[in-house]
Image (cartoon, rainbow, N blue to C red; front, side, top):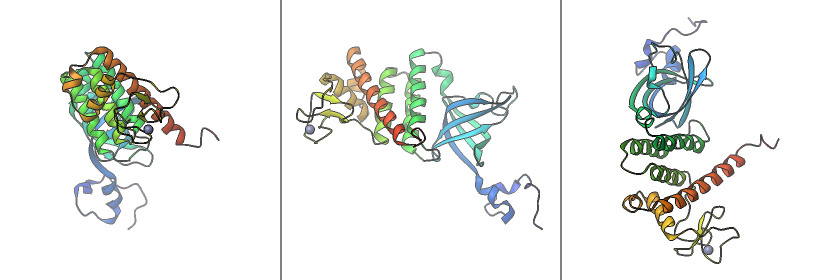
Length: 269
Ligand SMILES: [Zn+2]
C-alpha cells in the first residue's frame, strides 16, 4: 500500500510513535525559541527569517504570508523579537509553521537611537559569529538575549552594553583579547601596549611595531566588561569608554575578517 502521492497532512506529528510512512515528517518538525536576527523579503508575501535559536544555532526559514495583514505571524517575526517557533525542516530552508512572541525587544528599542543602533550591532555580530548554520551555540544565544534585555532595561549605557556583549561573544567564540598578561608569552601584566594582531596586551619584549598604548583605565574597563562587572564601567569617563570601544571594535573586526578569509577557497578560485 505504498502511496505515490505526497504524504497527507500529518496529524500523527504529535505521536510518540508514528507509522513508518509518517516517521520522516514526525522527526523533521521541531520547536525552539530564538531571536530574529534578520528578515528579508521573499516574493509578494513571504519572508526569509534568520533566527539564532537556543538549541539549533543559526537557522534560516521561510515565513509564509507574513506580509499579509491577517497573517498568523503578523509582527511577531521581526528583528529583535524573541520568539517561540515551530519549524518544519526543509531541504534547503526550514519553514516556520507557528510563531509565538515572547519578547518584542524591537518595539522598545526603536524609540531610542543609541539603544537601537547598539542592538543592531548585537544582531549583526551574532550573525557573523555563527559562520555555520545549525551549529548550536547556547552561550552566544544567552549573550544576545542578555544584551537585548539590558538595552531595553536602560540600566547601563548602550555603548557599554554593546562592548560587554562584543567582548563576551568574542570570548565564547575563542577570540577574547588578552587584557592583563602578555598575549604572546604570557608574562604577567598589566602591560601598557595593546596589539590587535598579537591578540591584546603585550609585554615590552613581545611588543610588535604599530602596537597602541591605551590608557590603563581603558584596559581595566574592557576587563570589567568581559567579566560582567558593572560598577567600574557605570562610573567610567566618556573618553575611556570611547577608547575601549575603539579597541573592542578593532579587535572584533580583525578577527571577523581573518575568520572569513580562512573559510572558503571560493574567493581565490
Ligand atoms: Zn610577551
